[in-house]
Amino acid sequence: RRVHGARNLVYFGFFGFPDLLRLTKTLLCILDSTQTLPPGESHNRTDIVTNTLSSVAHSVKTVGDVASGVVLGSTHKYNNTLPSSLPSADTSNPKGSGTFLTPGALEAQKSDELVMKTKLKIIEILRFILDVRLDFHVSSILSLFKREFTVSQEISSQFSVNNVMVKFIESVFESKSNEDDLDLDGEGGNKFLRVILDLIMHNYPPLTSAALDLLFRHFSQRQEVINSLSLVQLLVSSEDVENYKTITTDLEALRTLVETSELWVFKSQKKENNDKNKKSKQISNHNEVDYMELLMNNSPIDLNLGPSVSEDFVNKYNTLKRILLDFTKLCTYTDSDGKLRNKPHEQRLLSNMGALSVVLELLSIPYEKKEDLRMNEIMKLAYKFLQSFCFGNPFNQAQLFKTIDIFLSPSDNRFTSLLEAATMRYIFLNNANLCVEINEKIVQHFITAIETYGRHVAYLDFFHTIVKAGSQWIKKCQDLVMAELSNCGEDVMLFYNERNTFPDLVKLMSCHTNRVTEDNPLQYHIKLVKLLSLCTEGKNVYTEIKCHSLLPLDDIVNIVTHNDCTPEVKEAYMDFLNHAYIDTDIEMKEIYTSNHIFTLFE
Image (tube, rainbow, N blue to C red; front, side, top):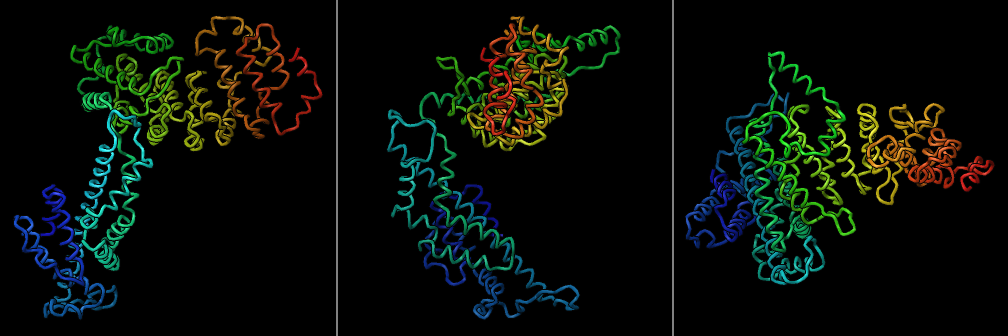
């Protein structure tokens, strides 16, 4: 009970670090069967708590000696300590042996189990003290770092363990002033190691496992400190501090809104009035194109569109929108060349503060997708934040990859499906390590989405991302995508190379207005041809053969040489011609024996 009470006091934070170090020496003496308590250890304490622990030491040491003797089979060393009625150590009762334990043997068995559990509690205390020592090491190193560098000096805001930090780590571990105290036993760690090895030999699996854990930590202190330091993020400038305060406030507000969403998110109610039912039906049957256009290019919250709700609920929608926009702006910015860049420091700050988990909870909130236009805009902003959160940040991409099943569940509408496809693209963008983790299920999900919601560029952009990460093509993904595409019908693979469909392509190319918008049939066709080209990069024989049957050389020449062929279409087809027919390991006699190449040159 006293050890249990001491453990609770330790967890409660009752002891300071110096007291914990003194407590460690006492606990090691309790567990060490070869030594007695240090003289004066229990007499030089003035505070009431350490006096109590001294009593614990004297009481439990006897129990510890008995346990060591019983388990290790050396009971003759503890004859002075054992009661005269204590039975031998072999109190087992194998099933079927027909041997019954005497009352004294049963009591001794219970006593042995109690001793093992007491030692296990002591190990829990030691594990906590090792955690406190780890915190002390990290704090000492950061103090040295702060003393060595000032804010005015140029240091990287993205904290990493570099050569300077390694020097600080070594100085903390090799400091003579701390060595005697931080080795926990005053003997250079010898007693600690002896006690742990003794506990490992006990025939009590939980105790053995806990002792092994302490042993591993004992021999990996430096690596443990380095791993902890790699998770530290420094707030170097006043701007970092301000961002931290803002994120803390906004994140708490966002978490509260998500947890109380059932109280303020709009829920439709069934109405008996026929006129109201008719009006509701008209709203739900809006043209989907108009619905998508409204959500993608307008702000229902700013325009106050959607069901009628109280002013307080409207304010909650506005608060959500402001927080998500602020978080998104923290993650990315546009440089002078108009290119999107990421802010690694702010992205990591949001990750460390748990913004990802809160936003994912926001996405799981149920709501009326056809009626609550305000909530649809909130969901769009949440997906936009996730895209910015992992843009150009491999660590955040890996964090989001762990929750990838959220984006692979069947979508209720095209609006959500397109947002999920765009988010998935950012998760794998330029990350070859994650692209190799792509499986058939993921590819099939988006193929099914194309067949369900129509031919949209966002789905093909995702396939572009996974078949080539930066300048590195991913053969596994090339094979997976090509295998699925080759089994699809015209819902996915529409090349306009048939006699009845070719005029449609000519009409699309001749109509310049179709080239202005991003998501249109011509743009989808161009992206599809580029996807086939990416699948054949790197001289992939399997995909090259598949592509030859999808786009024959005759069809390529007919489209490229047409008078209405646009530059974008020509670029896509010529790139495909190069990778699928020219830059290959397969001998293409058709290239050398026909006039197709000369026709293209002309």
